[in-house]
Image (cartoon, rainbow, N blue to C red; front, side, top):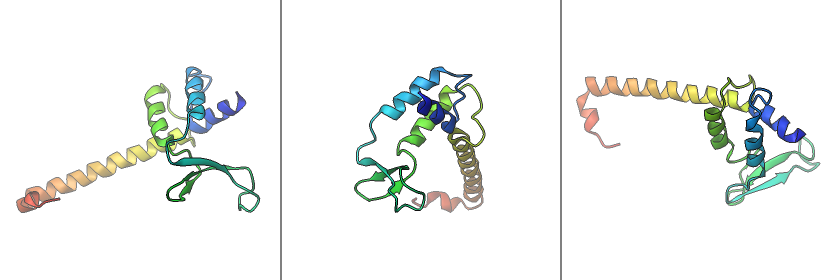
Length: 127
């Protein structure tokens, strides 16, 4: 229970305000990894020390500190939470990244619209 509560805080779930999300986080932690991924622990040769969890994509050998399905779960949690994410949490940074993506897409769309109006032949070019 303590690990799940700590993981909720790491994700940015306010367990006091939204205790119903604790069970969903617990279920997320218990579900299997996506196909092609394995969970591993660092050993004493790691610069960060032994015992830290990391994930490896078996086919490529690529490793990462976060679960490979975490971004999808964060999107799900953002739709379910009623409160703003805790500052510094994974949900907080996920929402910041999403906001920046939307702003960049809007800026690019604006630039492309301007180009296609001033240069109509560009609109006919294949992508």
